[in-house]
Amino acid sequence: MELTKEYFDQQLSLLNAGIEELPTKSDFAALKQTVHDIQETVNRIDKRSDEDVRAAYWDIEQIKKRLHLKPAA
Image 1 (cartoon, rainbow, N blue to C red):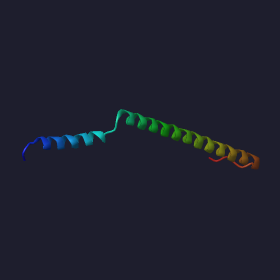
Image 2 (cartoon, helix red, strand yellow):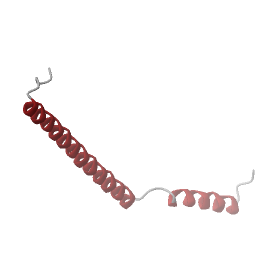
Image 3 (cartoon, rainbow, N blue to C red):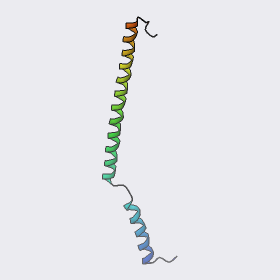
């Protein structure tokens, strides 16, 4: 293969096209923020689920007391 200006121009063009597809610093920052937002949402859901389960157990114990049932072991 002969090394010509056209060959190098073509290779440089391919390299530039590849570089343009790479994520930028702002892309990473946006992704980091999105992950952070998702983590906060998951934490809120986990906390709410835990509170709901605890409230349900409390309600069950209150019903058992009203019905004079033995508490679960």
